[in-house]
Length: 109
Image (tube, rainbow, N blue to C red; front, side):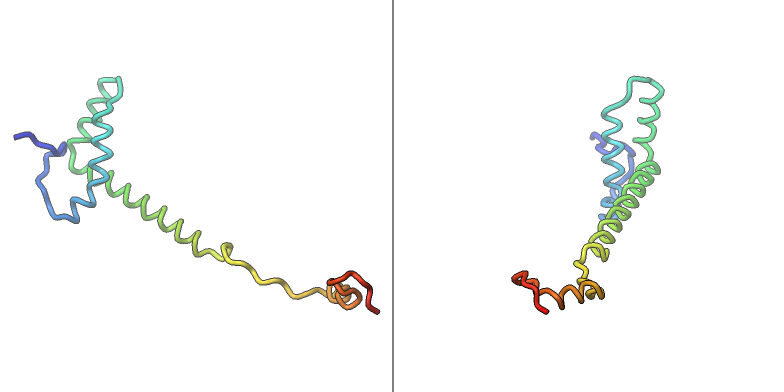
């Protein structure tokens, strides 16, 4: 029977399989699209067949995913997204408002 797993490992728990899935996909895509150089193609084949490399690629993927999620959450919760209340009027603005009624533009003294 054909082995569908490049790294040759046996099935494990669902959590382990879910964790290593990104690494398996990345290595499978690299394996199916090798470079033209023979040495580079052999290196990719060795990486694709290594359970350690599958784990490392998956770990890096999940680390980057957590970092991007953290950045998105920080951006959504940053104070810059909130509307700041207006500042209290300065002395000049207060005096101008006392001299002029801003509704109709007529001077009131």
